[in-house]
Amino acid sequence: MSRNLKIFLGISYLIILFAFLYFIFTWIEISKLNDFSYYKELQKNLNNFVSNNIIINLIYFFIFAVIWIALLGFGSPLLIVSGILFGQWLGTLVSVFSISVGALILYSFGNFFFRDLVNKILEQKFEKYILLFKRNEFYYFFIYRFIGGLGVPFGLQNLIPILFGMKKINYFLSSFFGFIPGFFIFNTIGAGLNSYVKEAEKFSMLDFLLSPNIYSPILMFTCLMIISLIIKKKFFDDKD
Image (cartoon, rainbow, N blue to C red):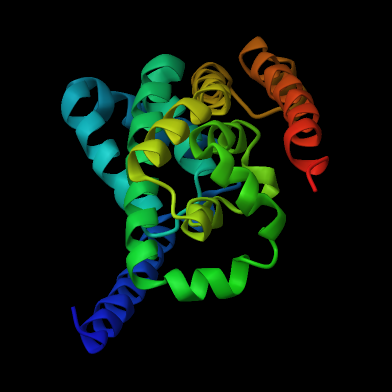
């Protein structure tokens, strides 16, 4: 493939990315975000829409999530939304699979078009980890996913394996299994948020935080963060 064609496709990708983000954020009715009745109406409409054809809506979500992640979208909002729409278990399944696929597409695309740029920007910062990943790319990338990517923004997390030429099958499987604990917690929060909006007459931060559907996953998230810090120190911080 010629250099000019690569440049054209790369620029086209960036244009599509910004157009997609503009469409998403202009669709949201920002003026109503402080009105609790707006959320109750939205929750009711979403529940009716999803329950009418769960299979079709799972496919819609899967396609949207893959495109969103492939276009460098944030991961956390998708997890909350999947929990709201499909509950903690089904939401976890569809979000883990779709985000893993989207991340793989982003990695493949970035590895082809932006390898030099990624190396220029990230290689020095993550130099001490490159040899570590090369020792056992599946094992260490699984840990990397499990602990949340060392605090690196999600889009960049998906591109870091370009630095050490990770095999695509290892990339997908280590991402898939590494995502599960954190994704389950976020989907549980989303499902709890959906239940709270459905049952509450008005929003109260205290009632919201004291709801078992909310504080239970928050406690799980706190435990996961503590475990992640311990793992990070053991496998990454102490490495020369």
